[in-house]
Image 1 (cartoon, rainbow, N blue to C red):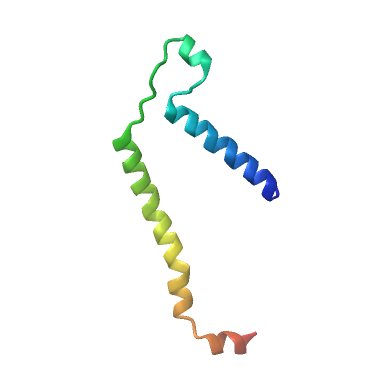
Image 2 (cartoon, one colour):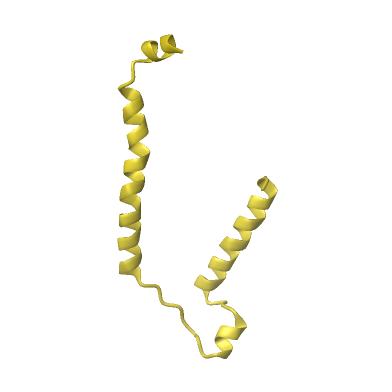
Length: 78
């Protein structure tokens, strides 16, 4: 996937999300009586926090390990 494909996909996803937020959902959903979309905000917040903590740990572990590495010894061994 090159840059142009990524831009097209991103605009499609952003446009679909924007349409849902602005209330321009699919006509089939309106035909079935769906008029509003509700998001479980507390559950989303808990999910983001629980997903973010392992991400932060995973992102900080390699740099901390690299900071303790003796660069001259590593270069000399190669």
